[in-house]
Image (cartoon, rainbow, N blue to C red):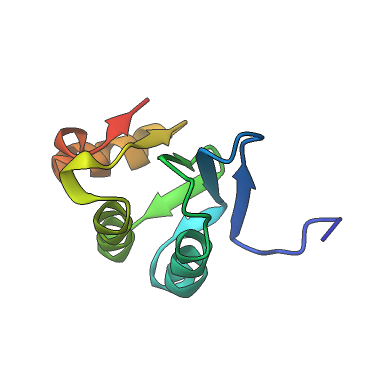
Length: 107
């Protein structure tokens, strides 16, 4: 879909199929819940590493935190490899307050 279809969620898969990147644009909140779930639930079973790219995310709320936890369960719980990347300072602060550094690799 060229020309920015206005979708808040975009996904990329690495060439080897092992890394699945989910980019969230704008607000990461309840309105993105379904498309975020669809994104990872339809990822290939070969995926062993998820990257959540928040470089274009302006805001996240508690439902976004819940979605990240659901993704973590989907990806294997304590064995999950999930990196959260390119957070702005507001987003990073919310993740810190929620102790998400314990659960995810935040870069």
